[in-house]
Image (cartoon, rainbow, N blue to C red; front, side, top):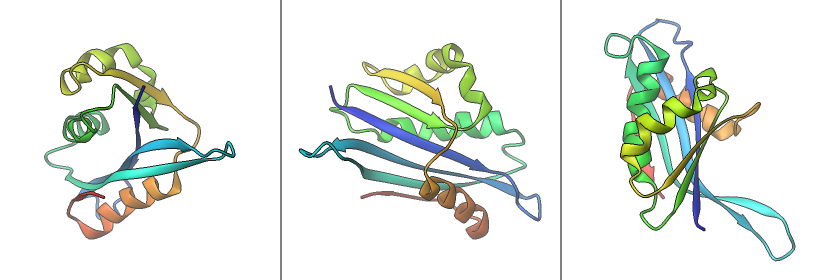
Length: 137
């Protein structure tokens, strides 16, 4: 089964209080013949959201997932979302809400203790830049 992983980080420490950044990567885990694993990133996003339009983290996360989930490769059968955000504890509610963006795919939300440093850097960069970038690699 082909699985895409989405690593997601949120940075809301804008010194001017104007916006927040959400960074992320969509990737496959690839296991080498020697048993080692690497991440094959195929899409990155660094999204800047204005606080006036997105006053809460919850609203920002919902918007971001509605944009990012459809970017998963069509042939993948499952999506695993990874984040340190406390919102990822409400798994059932998230599955129901975001399943519409991933028809025919299994969707799993996992709250993790650590997230990839590159994901965090993308979130911080969005706040510093004050605009969004998404790129399929």
